[in-house]
Image (cartoon, rainbow, N blue to C red; front, side, top):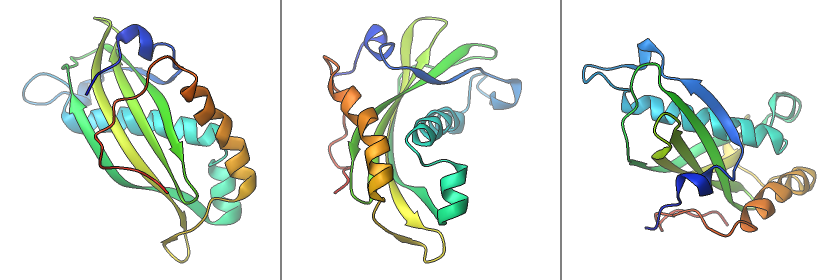
Length: 164
């Protein structure tokens, strides 16, 4: 798996930008692994809201995105008060789901701290089953995915996740 450089990831907008709070520090005196997922989730949510999967869409249509799979690769520890950012690379927009990679950057040392690959399914909140993404949301989301494809590099993928 070839990883992008810090500068390459910086070509993507930051959809999460924060400092490691004290409550995220564990007994090893660094950010606990579960909070890397928090950062990736915040960034993913921000991008999906831009794509039209926002609270209004959820409330009015009773449709949402559920995480069904993820793969994480930890590359650097983050310590108390250090700044990190989450950058989303939209991999694929399917008929019933999305495939994303989130890069968490260590902004103190200008390096990649974590790669988070995820698949989200579009779910009917009442039936609790995957359903097709409506055409108007597909149209709104598609430019985000097309923009990522224009980069000179691609996101590293674990090879076992995909959406149809």
